[in-house]
Every structure is written in C-alpha cells, then in structure tokens.
Length: 314
Image (tube, rainbow, N blue to C red):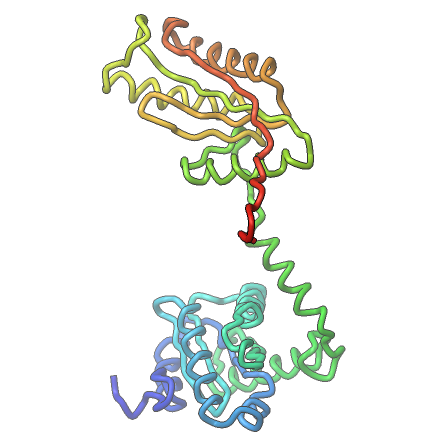
C-alpha cells in the first residue's frame, strides 16, 4: 500500500488511490456510490475546521463499517467520499444500499450533543458496458443532485420540521424492537430476562388488575427423587419443546434448574394454570413415560408492593 495514495486525514484511499483501485475492480461490473456531507461548510463556519476534520474522520469510519471485503472506499474531495462495490450490479440494490447509508447517518447521534447534524446524501451509478470511472462518477453526481432536489428535506424540497427527526427515530425504534415471530409457541428466555418480565408484569398488576400465574414444572423419578443426569438431559430437552408448543405465544418460560422449568402464563387464574400444566404433562406423556415423572405447582402473581418512604428518605 503506497502512503502517497492514502488520504492524510482519514487514512482511506485518496483520489488517485481510489481511481487506481476501482480501475482494477470495475471490469467485472459493480456500483459506484458518491457520498457527500450535507451543508458541510456550515459545520466549518460555525464550529471551526478542527471540528470539521473530526466530522470527516467520523464519516470515513462509519462508511468503513458499512462496506464488505472487496469493496473500495476513498475520499476524493473536501467532503466527498466514494465507495465502489463490485458485488452490486443492479439499480434496485444500489438504490437500497444508498438509502441505507443515508439512514445510518440519520440515526447516528454522536455529534448531536454538540449541535451538529451530520447527514450524508448518496448518489449511485451502476456500471454500464464500456463505462469509465470518470463517467460513473459523473452519473453518480447527477443522481446525488437529484436526491438533493427531491423532497427529503436536504435540498430545494420540503424543509424538515422539528418533528420529522422524531418520526424517523420512532420508525427506527419500531423496526429495531419489533420481533419477527418465526415459530408459534411460548417465549423462551434466560432466567435473568424472565425475572425482568416477571417483575414488569407484577408492576402492571398494581393498576391493571390483570391475572397471571407462575407454574413450576419438575422432573422426578417414580419415587419423587432426582433422575440420573444422562436421562434427565434428554427428558428436559423434550419437556422444553412440549412447553413451547403447548403454551400460547404470549406466555413465557425459562429453564430454572437442571430438572425444572418455570412458566409464566398471562391472563390466567390458578385453576386454569393447573389445566395448562396438565396439557403440558399430557403432551409430554404421549412420547411415553410415567405420569409420576412430572409434577407441578402453580401460584397466582400478586401486584408489586410499593414500600412507603420513611422520614426524609425521598
């Protein structure tokens, strides 16, 4: 790697270096992405060039996180960065990648504490037969200008209102937190997570009055004692599968000990919880075994206790 081909500030390829690397890779096709920092001159004017340099370093670092082995990243101007992805050879994929890069910077809040909004606009160009680096860069620049002229709030279109960023945050949060349930059945969690869910539910009972029950299922031998480790592991794995498939999608369970599962069933009385436990036992026994191998105990959850503050403890 020639040091003269590296950008002195960010450590990625400079303009001559990126042209050389892309020339080596572009014959097989690919896409070029031109990434430009929005209103970068304002950052320099308002916060100084040292802060501007830090922003350039952050953009290079973030883009570096988003590329794969075989992709090429460089800085070709003051606030312009180029990525070439040999594996991206269709326009739809290129547009999707460009939007993902822009979204990454919208959700990166590292500079907002300083009052800096560090956003990037991306223009993409998929290589056409016989095309050069220069013509691809020109087309990517035209695509970038089109993005800025659009209604995404960073060019001549509709200006952003303060609520826009919050709506974007909410959409991102919803996507991050939403679970895609691929297999129906109860929700299996580790014990610490189960405990948090349990306590959250107890707190909710203070106001909602909703009913919930816990069920402790224990594997024993015919005399009520522990089963040998080898046999127990096989039976516990089978029992976990039976709990998952028997309970509802809103119920939660966890491995409590080497021979016990703890189950949390929502909107259920103790009488119904006993019936739920019996259904689990019935499924467990369909694969063979003695009913004395599985015992259970149920109890209803109570609303969390709110301790009164004493004296000056406030």
